[in-house]
Image (cartoon, rainbow, N blue to C red; front, side, top):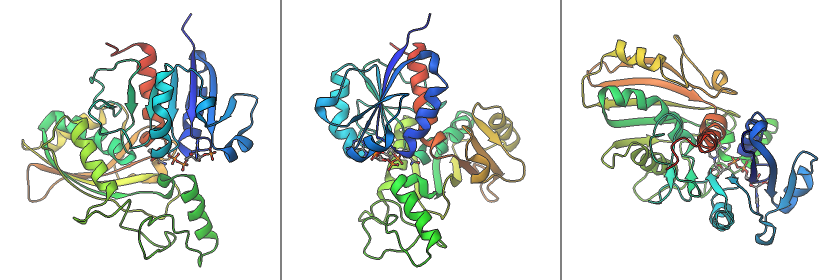
Length: 333
Ligand SMILES: NC(=O)c1ccc[n+]([C@@H]2O[C@H](COP(=O)([O-])OP(=O)(O)OC[C@H]3O[C@@H](n4cnc5c(N)ncnc54)[C@H](OP(=O)(O)O)[C@@H]3O)[C@@H](O)[C@H]2O)c1
């Protein structure tokens, strides 16, 4: 009989956590108990017979086998260590530990070979990083990439529940500006009927914190500190589903037929002949690829368009992939 695990979910009604919960229910044969840790408000609205709900306070933290964190950077920073002290393996969706040397940053099907060690902290990469890395990996294996240029089209749900609710309110009352999408900017603009070419905090050099996350995470996942990139992160007026245009230059000349054949045969990649879009990708655990073509002027470069479900591919599926690997005992030292 397979072992059953005691699992904690930290982050109450978080959009990502709702998807993690759905995926965990599909794995009921290995789940003994689920406890959700929420804010005070969250505890009230999450009451359920299926699982225990606790307010997130140090004195309420119990011992668990696994703890999935989806409450944002500050919650992970404050509480993850305590869960680990009490024996939990933490799988964290926040960005706070991703670039720490000792943290494992694992993108599904990309750097699985990185050694796992039980009791450590495992980080999910940024939702765009996961999507981009998953498509780049088979191409990198063929031609070795040197530089990646990415323009993103990121949906409202990528900023969480409050931001998504704000966007829906903007749609319902076009004069309303939720203000959620340009956190630190003086000039607030709506997302509805608009696109906002600034995600995260603007740094002195003109790039944003979101763009830096993707840049540094790609370097870490591909074990290549020299990997060049230029990212432009853009918020688009969609409820769900992130997309990107990717232009990638390789060390070796590309063979488009071979590249496409390899992509089509890669696990978790769905190539669509004409085009793909966020509506195709929403609800799927695959990364969708289309508009695949060679750069007209450079035989070493490819350009293509990708879409994926940011809450699934970009977060929950990756977290559950790590859980499955750990439970199966694969890659554990
Ligand atoms: N959204 C995405 O597409 C996406 C993709 C990849 C990674 N991520 C990352 O995943 C994390 C979760 O993202 P999200 O979009 O799901 O966020 P979210 O919808 O904004 O959810 C955050 C949740 O944290 C809970 N919370 C607030 N204070 C808390 C406390 N003191 N203790 C416990 N929980 C508390 C709140 O739920 P209650 O009030 O119900 O407790 C809130 O719903 C973030 O770090 C985000 O950067 C998000």
